[in-house]
Image (tube, rainbow, N blue to C red; front, side):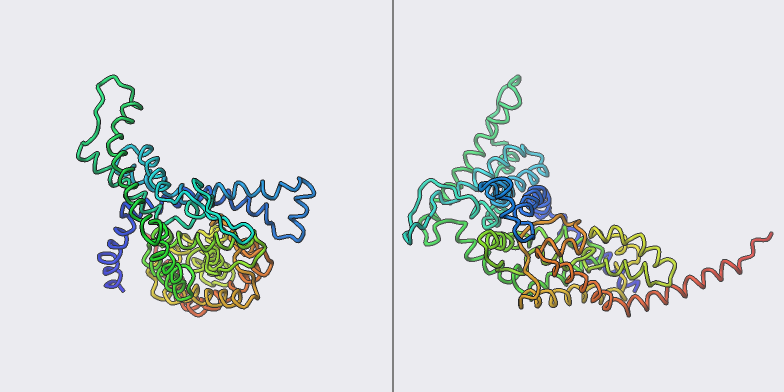
Amino acid sequence: MNKFEKLIDEKISPVAQKISAQRHLRAIRDSFATIMTFLIIGSIFMIIANFPINGWEELQVKLFGEDFPQLIMTPVRITFDFMSVYIAAAIAYNLSKRYNIDAFTVSLLSIASFILLIPFDSSIEVDGTVHVVPKVLQIGGWIGAKGLIVAIIVGIVVTEIFNLFVKKNISIKMPAGVPEAVSKAFSALIPGFVIITLTLIVRTIFAATSYGSLLQMIYSLVAMPAQAFIGNSVLGAIGLSVTSSLFWFLGINATSTLNGVVRPFWLQLQEQNMAAIQAGLTPPNILTEQFYDLIYMGGIGATLAVCIFLALRSKSKQYKEIGKISVIPGMFNINEPVMFGLPIVLNPIAFIPLILSPVVLILINYFVMYVGIVPKPNGIYLPWTTPPLIQGYLITGSIKGALLQLFDMFVVMGIWFPFLNVMDKKQCVLEVEEEKDDDDFDFSL
């Protein structure tokens, strides 16, 4: 075990930490963390507009008028439907801060460049005839979750080009005494002009292709196949779950390392579910981010069940106290106390249930949603600290979601029981030996 821990400490962990700390990945991760505020706010209004009670929409119309359902959905549209614009700005801003360059100007250039890549006409079907409306930037679509991949690329590329000009000292210098705001504006003229010009060239080139735009090409060649495997495939879900659990076993926060990569695919699926519900249809997708929220009760590995088991059933004094301390954080999906306190991290006995539990839950939950026993996720975005059961009810819009999570907890307890039992017995033996040693110790002089 010492050799294994040494191997992890000296070889594996530094590589994983280096990948996690890579500036572009960190900028992406931090940017998604930044816009979570918008997504949570939009989700609150989504819950208000679509609260899972029969007759709720009719009650809103009766109390506040016919226009109220559309009005209450407006915050949802300015949060979810502008998501790619926010990400393009946030990535440029966060990456620019790391380069110590003018973050605000670069973020504005990133927004402008991203919008410049979007086709400015929209197709509308009226009485079976398709009409093309020019000079229209459609809410949702490319500026929503569908354009996230290009938004990420634009945020990074724009920042790198701007930073290159700064490093090469290619800018218009203003004399001393000129206000700082004016000086910054002129210093950004050359890199800004080059960035917008290059973006315009890219737009023109792709407009001449069968795709019509860079966004459509990337979405067709990259996003849709990747989404099919990573975002909406059981095998992809299992692979992601195993990787996340493995990272946590090594003591690495898998959420911060992996979610920034897969969240763009999740958000597109989530947006499709929300659109279906608004249209009165059944959500088409199961494996959204909310599906994983249902799985990870208490955090990665579904460790809330472990905390409850330790608090109620452990014979070891130490394990029982760890369980008691970890239950409250676990209820809000914070699992560091039990991960590092039991510990689960680098614990060979805990490795198998840590990997196995979420995989089993993925298979169970996917099956019951696929056959229609439990409703599919409705697309609302909940704070990651939302307690289980409440979480299950809100994500599915049904008490069946809460009952599914309750069932999942018992499944996790069943998987962990033999392993926790072995660990508990060993810990009890250690505690008895320690107490015996204390009793045998002679304090007399």
